[in-house]
Image (tube, rainbow, N blue to C red):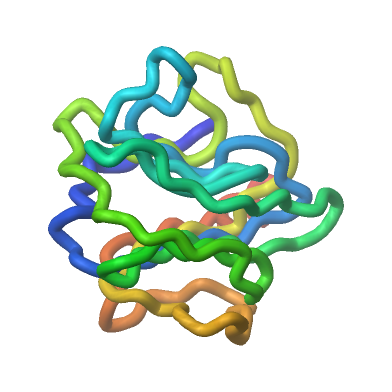
Length: 168
């Protein structure tokens, strides 16, 4: 299953943070635009179980994640205005100098979870996804939030914990 969100213009945010808490997850967590090889367009942005990054006019910029399976993980993709930073469970995994992602075309909607075509199915549970204005994490290590909550800088928050509890 997947959730389709709105078109999101990351470029207009300036610095931003995209983060998720997942359990035993293996595959795409969030994407906007195509990230599939020859089909990749210059406006794709993604977080999956292996990497996080974006494709823009400057090419592909991505950091490694490699989520351990059968565990609860916090992942974050941060743009601080000059760099892409990736984090896994509070530890920075990569810093790369980068321009911001290009403006997303109107047809590039946020997808959370498996792709609508079913080409990328996943195992596990996505607890929550949050997009925030500003670089929330910039140090080599940070405290991992137990729960993603809305705050003054929150632009978008999907909390699937209640949905999962209601289905159990």
